[in-house]
Length: 168
Ligand code: RP5
Image (cartoon, rainbow, N blue to C red; front, side, top):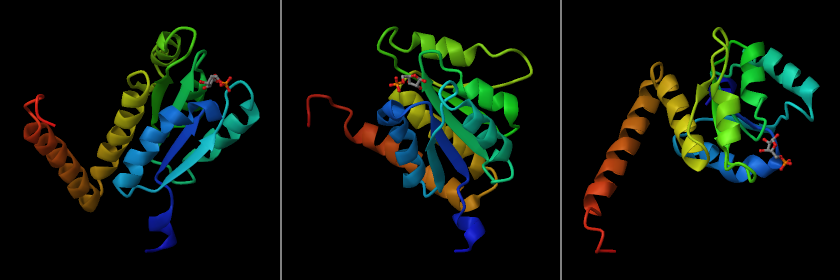
């Protein structure tokens, strides 16, 4: 495989190491689909210069999507979207104080002109952001499309095989 094929297609960033327990669900889904990803803590408030540098370089680094998770005053996805044309997929991390409603509203209420695709609060949002990024990439990658179709077929088969909840 060439260096270009090996290069990360998706970046997964988060506002704090404390977000990892949520955001690892995105990384695990990407890895299961054999999508190379870059993972990094980038804080809108604690490392604002790093945020700007990361966003400025995102397109030239070849990222086709940025999955950004943050909690509380969750400005990371929106500020990234303000500084790069690479699509930003926002994941509201469940906060202790307000259970993630603060994170959700911080991410979803973007002004017209600067879009962030916003997902569910917590681990479901992280997993679905990864699957959404995979679907975007699959439009231009037939092998990935096959892997994504296989994942969905297995998911359906697993539910059908366990459709009687009394059986283990
Ligand atoms: C946000 O503040 C992070 O995304 C995190 O969800 C939250 C709390 O961060 P820590 O105080 O745990 O580092 O910036």
